[in-house]
Image (cartoon, rainbow over all chains, first blue to last red; front, side, top):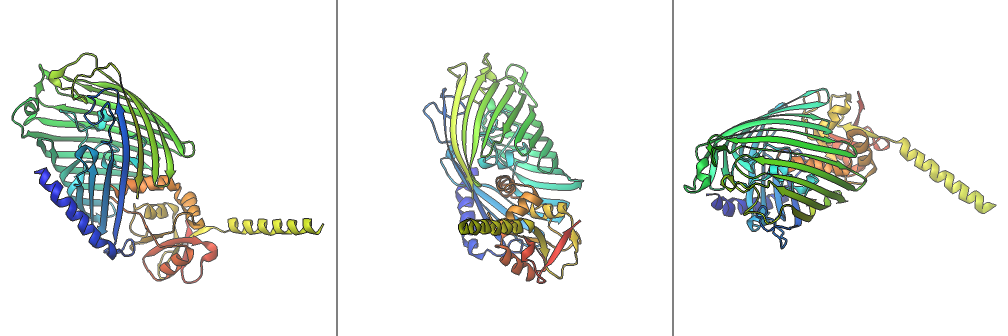
Length: 360
Length: 142
């Protein structure tokens, strides 16, 4: 079903956007149309060929991606926005990333309807726009969507969102209520309901707390995945970003759980967290990240990474990254292989990457 | 001796000219019909960062921006908004690519902004004080 949308909606949006471009008027006026895009050109090499399926021991450009974004104001309160993207992991087929209408009830409340970027995880809504964060890949234990089993984050959902915001002094307080259906490989997460609370102090300190739940529906009637069918999937996350003039700190923690006990009566639960510290020195920002990911009934991993982000221009950056991944030493394949497509051949896996990111 | 005096006078003229430039400051301007007389820096920040779409009095606000590297823009974003160009780009990228907002459209340099504000009752812009005249209203900061 999702394949049909990939081939039809994306090009339609692109053509519609192209036709609309000459109609651009003054910003903020009804009918104003804005175009934007992002591009990531990345190369990553792993010392183990089984890691995450996207990073091979011979190198690969699977993280290379681009996206085009269009937004327009339909009337005083109604806005429409859509984004298409093409990724190396999906053979660069342009697909609809999200598209939704938003209605400003007043300055404190906005309603959204359509296919909406999944709002859980402080980087998740703009995770394809690498220019906006320090890493080539944000911490995978928290942000991966490849591992079979409970995930903390998803790509998007189809449904509604309600945003409330207010100010207490210089602090913006936000509350997001959302619900709908998530398309996942070989299935859906139905009856999705989630809430997110956020506090933003002048963009220097941002805090988020979230909780959501849904019921898995697995189309594949065979294999381990089917054991998750009809199971309730619940996640809780907490995160903070401190972004001062030079110093940047980011940390998130999340827990995801699945209702039924599988894999030898072990619950299919997972926890993941990370801490990143960086320091800007002019155009350069070195950073270090520690990450821990544990999956009950499966594999977990610990990751230490160092990287460097260099501003090339005000809309482009060069990134270098080295990470060492240490999987749990006791394999529990009945519960899954985590981010490995097969049993790793090494105790510690090294991943090296380089990327150029830009927005336009 | 003449050469020294000549060079010294050139230096003094340039120094005074530079003082004149830095003595100027950036001001926020609106259409003369706008009832506001003053505005808080917090409200200017919210309007220019897409967090507020209306003036404090309730009228629709349409912010106009200047191109990169103009003196007005540098003064405005460094001094009033408090964001460098790089941080500003990251800020807007986070909103644009989640469909939650778009940056103010770049209208032009001081002269163009002034003309645009003078013809647009809902407009808000920023220009150097030395460029302002009675075709626009300067808002004092609260």
